Image (cartoon, rainbow, N blue to C red; front, side, top):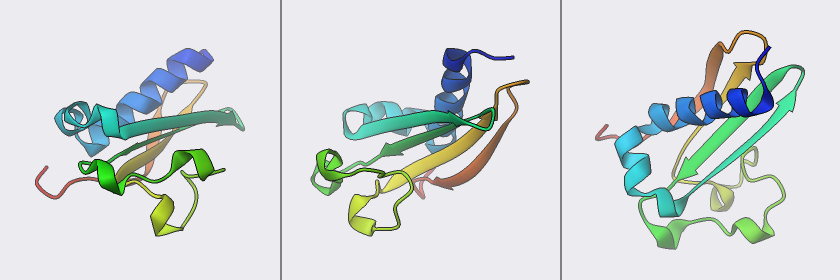
Length: 100
């Protein structure tokens, strides 16, 4: 069984890699992550944008990762589930830059 921290690290890294590691590091000041455990799965989300003026207002959002409101979404994002028992992961969605 993975610890909370181990599963979180796997999930956040999977999301970053899915979007593109170099892209995420280049725009890390315009990025965020979220994570939580439910039913022995760690769900992780990473959102990043290459234009700071497009960033959603995170202070006014209650659940930015799951909303369908385009004004509350990051331009590029990924979400995955990590099995807390064995560390296997499944990418639920990924919007990455076209050039990658």
